[in-house]
Length: 161
Image (cartoon, rainbow, N blue to C red; front, side):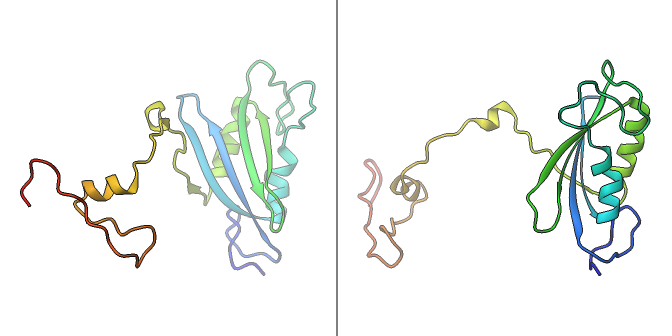
């Protein structure tokens, strides 16, 4: 018996729990990001059986079967079964079935923060040498490793000693 309850039905089930990460772009340009824990049966019913095959020639809704070639509401998923590497997939839902999929993915799920960075956040700066950082903090450089004798910095020109 798992100690964690399945998010779909809320009870503890025999067998391991899978972790499922949902990524669902919305029409208002926001993205719904959720994490759920599902038992093996619910993982099969709500995730694996609805995945669009990677080699599909035409996109059809996995729930109702209509063509989604011209108007797809994608749902992306990454799931981790115990002791297995992560599996990624996508579901090409029609608009009405995507609403049901979003509701199911949100049930007893944890909201995940946005992991995208703004362009300004992506700029990296070279790290300042440790001596400069300690000097800016007004501290003595502790040396190469902890416990090494401290080396005092020379006074900055124009400052009182």
